[in-house]
Image (tube, rainbow, N blue to C red; front, side, top):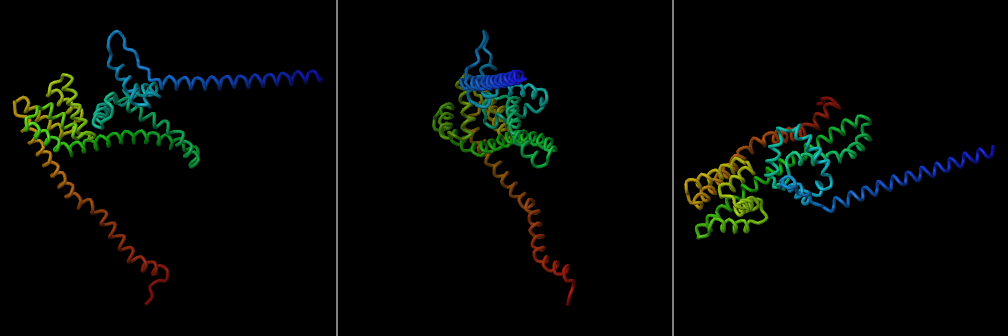
Length: 317
């Protein structure tokens, strides 16, 4: 009997040691794998080109270099991009335009940027689950799923707002850059020298970034018309498209660029004034509802005590 108990105890002890050893090996392997993964990621090794040069490989290499999240979670982002390419096919051109207008890295494509936003929303899901399950119980799963979808939508909306804000900044400063180009060219500078000096003068502003890309395109061999057409397609704004269209038309007709720039600067100022007048005219209508609410609140503050007195004590003479 004692022998059987001893053998059973020894077997259990050996099994316990074996399980602990196995668990330790699994945990050590997992930690080693995670450490190796992070080491490989932060090395930022470039993908190798094949016999023929491929733009997509160079694009991915540059994106891994400039964006840490893409470098960390590239397989997951590319998987989500594969899904987005089929689910949001009609929205991708608009997202791509907003990426360009917002001044983000030109190496992003719409489906991968959308995948990055969705991945951020998924990373927030444990927090939503923890909070909502504590608050509302099992129904919290549905609320957490809705919160994840709302987070992805908010990141998409934030991109649109960022693009709209940057375009507004460009249009606000563009008349001054065109005036400077006009003065420099009338003083005898060539267009390239004038553009280079204007970009240097407005360095750090979105308008300088966009005209700097025009300058880089021309230095890389594009014609003046091709460089401005690329800027038009990149920003895709009605006012900027109209201005660049006038520049391209003047280029075809042989009109001096200084005259075109001066005219377009005046047009931009006129549109800016008209836009300010429109906003001022709408201010009265927009203030109507707040004014009514303030008036109702004032009436309630004045009449409220009398109404409470009547409800409590009745009408007494």
